[in-house]
Length: 178
Image (cartoon, rainbow, N blue to C red; front, top):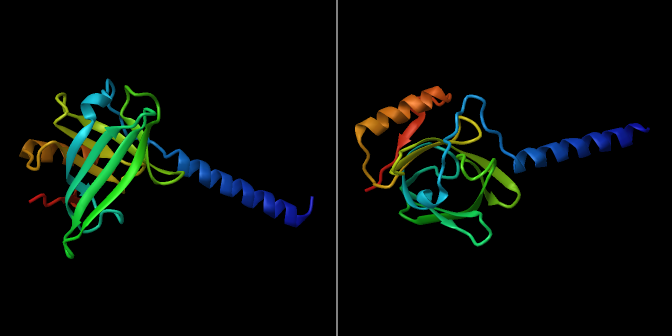
């Protein structure tokens, strides 16, 4: 086989591997997922009360996530917030699908075609009043609540969970909701 063909084969394998990884985000090794998850109880509007700042939400305040069921069993995700500087409303719509089955809090979310990010629910209130989510890496971390204000106990719990999954608690941004 010629060097050119070997190089093309290697590039093809690499591209295939990258596409596979983009479509199948990793569940971090140190993450323990919520079990007994009930999607119907999770649907609805959540306030994003904390996050590790990321390029998609940088500078956003008054952030929410709304989850609704699509006809095909996937979940529509509508994230919105207000740019703190310009005051403009921003929205992003995506689709979430379960990774392992609907009773386990492991989903993957796509806002851009075949590219998915991990959405791993690691803590969830028994009454579905708050949730703590970790992405495919500690670069992505969110605390969601059904209310704009949260008790100090939830902040303390979020910091403890963050530390346990490799998120530096100093990187948590407590989002302005008013």
